[in-house]
Image (tube, rainbow, N blue to C red):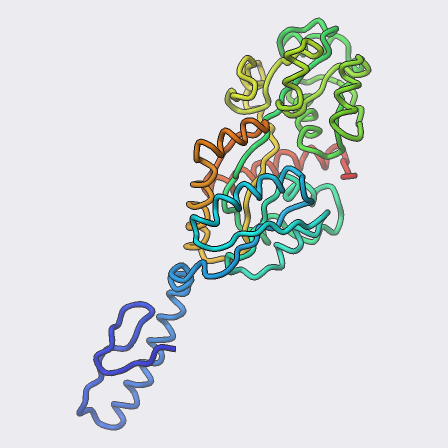
Amino acid sequence: MQSFTEGADASCPGSAPPLRKNAATRQLRISHWAAGVFHAAIVLACPATTHAQTYPNKIIRLITAEAAGGSDVIARIIAHGLAPRVGQQVIVENRGGLVGGETAAKASADGYSLLVYGSSIWLLPFMRPNIPWDPVRNFAPVTHAVSTPSVLAVNPTVPAKTIKEFIALAKAKPGEFNYATASTGSVNHLASELFKSMAGVNIVWVPYKGTGPALTALIAGDVQMIITSAGSLSPHIKSGRLRGLAATTATPTPLAPDLPTLAASGLPGYEAVSAFGVWSPMGVPKPIITLLNKEIVGVLTTPDVRQKFLAAGIEVVASTPEDFDKLIRREMARFGKIIKDLGIRAE
């Protein structure tokens, strides 16, 4: 701890004002006591500044899901670009299942352990009992890094060329159309239920174990509709095996440039994308969050990184912590209600 001496600087992290040389003994003791109190107050008032001045000075780890998964790829791209920007090694630590979220939630709030994960981090608590984290209380948003836009597509035998035509057909034949999902409780499953609710249609859910089987069933005509990633659908739409009707993004996406959005096709306010973000454990000083946001956004918004993500069917978002927090709370309110109303339980 910095000591207080005669003539010391009173700036943060602080010291007491100069002591009078000829003060009485009692006054001197009081002055020393006051200096100690002053110093303690300064240290308590300025911990974030101290952290920010020394951060980072060791390895930063990005905790994520299994290797080769979506969040793993995103974490590795961020780590590669972040290391030279902060002057420290940045490593990716793969944790399977729920272990990644639990590990990050219990990590020290010092900015050296970050979580790179998808929307399931805030959706799973609605679908599984005893999830070992709370998405709001245990994590502080750093940035909404990227999103995976989806498209609503139909089998070409469905005589609808627009969303309005498809909704009209579904209303005329309640319960006769089916839609496929790749997994239970996924964002695209919830996006399909959101579409049904907002459009006021009865389309039957048929779950499959993976995107491949779901697309195979749609192409074969076993189901009539799907909402899944634009990247997965693009080759089938281009070949004519499927017909894309609209994108699930709030604004047009370059990953489906010829398609309108569902919001612009008669369902104002509709939006559903798979979001991937970066979080820190709750309690990391704000200056460190600000620094991390700046440097990670800097990585994500470089032209080569943007292009690399677009080639993989992913759009860069690179939001502020505040905007990411708003998104999380909005999605928890909207999709949490759907999950509860339908009694959806994760696989």
